[in-house]
Length: 262
Ligand code: NAD
Image (tube, rainbow, N blue to C red):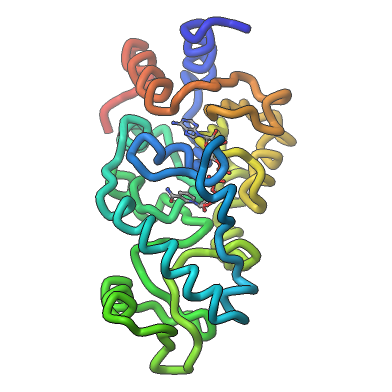
């Protein structure tokens, strides 16, 4: 295994000629902002699996469990601020080398870091809005949470009567086709694919790097735990994203002309 600084150097050499970098990010990029992921060892989610879409739609008990769990997570998400890894991706976009981010996260931290909202594809939706599970109408998550906090059990959509929840995608819920098409287009047109803090075990996100691999596009993976694509990646980091990504920016900045000011 090469040392961290050797692997950083290898990654920088791949990044130097790249002008259409795409990053796929998962819950791991936000753990350093204080939001726990689901799959790291010791996670409470492994003992108490998240509510599935099917259960949410069909069982009142599951909807109550959903709101209890959301209560525990939502204050951490509300307090979270972008960390060094989010900031490094924003820097890449500012310098015109990052065409987009495909994120599995619903926390909005890429936008807070300064990435343009139109360049961030939220595969699993956002926890910053509420949505009806039947007609899809968006509404204020703050107002919905206030209804729950004041004791309402099963809030329903005033338009169609469907159950309301945060505008996130639950396990078993389909990612909207338009969102998926946008993500595939990014993967099909990038000249370097970066995976950051994703176990690559949740589809459809886990399928996206394969589109770049088939075109022989360089693949760099930064994830604490091994992923199923480690064997085919060009450079692997089992280190924290907040440690690794800023070093890419430092290295690119040192190389004259690679990070031109926009
Ligand atoms: P996941 O499958 O993408 O796994 C997260 C991975 O991140 C793990 O393999 C872990 O080793 C790695 N990791 C943790 N901290 C890291 C760090 N500092 N640097 C680099 N890698 C790190 O995601 P999951 O936790 O199984 O969650 C499943 C789904 O739940 C996600 O796809 C997402 O939709 C949702 N979720 C979102 C958030 C969020 O928005 N912040 C948080 C938890 C879960």
